View 1 (cartoon, helix red, strand yellow):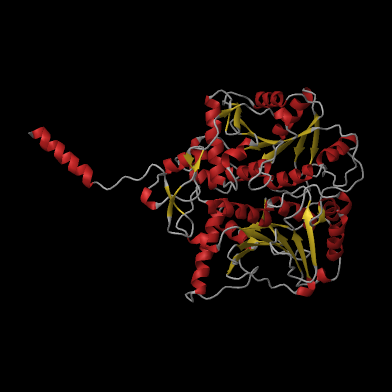
View 2 (spheres, helix red, strand yellow; view 1 turned 90 degrees about the vertical axis):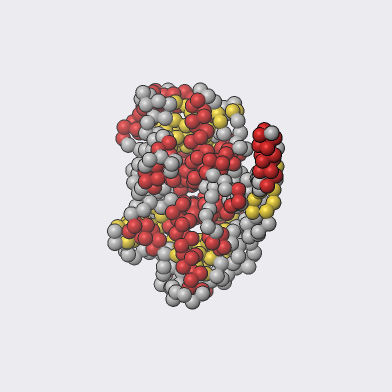
Length: 577
């Protein structure tokens, strides 16, 4: 009788219990209250937005959502088959306390404004190496990272397939750490496009570099290039020769330049194994590693990198036009950005963002939300436009044009704000600043707070309807068309650059209120100003706004003659090809 009573009580409890959530995860579409089941990809639900709050998805489950479609063990892709390898010598240590925010001191170490453990710089450099566009990978490029504890990771284009489009810093770093740790457990097998080449603190730097060059294979038709601003500039004016070079391995410090000991180890080991060694730079001004990678990628896609290196090897002291050095870099101190007058008009980039301003009103942005990818790309564009290793780009501004028609305009005053607060600029912190600016703008529009100044006069200016305040008579507009081909005819390459060069030396752009407006990927063909040039950048994918910004800064902010030569090599009329 007791057993029957207990069984009946248990049955009633199960009958009255609320229904359990479905095994197929429920999701809330952005901007809608409708909950739908996530679509299936290879028999597994696909993550496309933030999970519903009723599911109470934990952080551990979020990590599983990110990793469930991750590729399994694959055959390693040899480094000897790629044409361009970027080797980053990092000061970070790949331990869980430093790499993730869950360690005892992980968050402070990862985000502090010093050269040690700056993983945000490493993430931007890897993104510039492997992603040709937000959704496409370079087929013949690879990245290698050498850490301070003599651990070495190799990354192939398969990382793009594993991580997906528009990678955020957090998502990319988490994937690299998890895949490298699994690869180390599997004795060096490639997992998710990442492979651990040499591990262990007992490994010396000399042994690690030797193992790396053995992994690179035959040194014939290959060259090792060590980049540092203290070396002579790489030529921009290229004379094609015998094309004896097939592959280049570029050594760069990330974020700090190579030490003399590291440079000597790489050079000595390469020469002993039969490699050609070259020391050069991309201008005399210090620059971010990620921006140097973006410029070298575009130069290589144009077919200029190998001939330029070959010319330097053949005649290091040849009289030729060298790579332009950026002239508007200004040092940031605790008093803000230096107010030394900078010659030339301001350069205003306008970048489209595929999300509305309301994306900043969401309570939280997690790695599985589609809005984070677009905001991460916008943050990288802002960093490339405004920041440099010694402070700010004094003449540059950027406007993020959102899909709703609103805009955010960022100026060099934002660099001063980060410097005064003692914070290093990271993707997360920059997006958080944009969110706070949006909240302040909402109070201004409701009449709670008084309105602020116009764009360019404050760090971040939010507009419900985008508007520029430049004089039409002394403003040059450059439209970088989306519908362009990488294989545009070279015979047409001089026309846009000649128009831009003529405008730069003209009297209108020497006036105090003059400006250069660069529109990236405009959706319509209607110019905003009477003096407009419609062009495309050969070798740069139309969706890679960061690479376009880096190339245009070289031409517009460098020495006039060198900048004009670079623009002549890369700018083509829009729609050609």
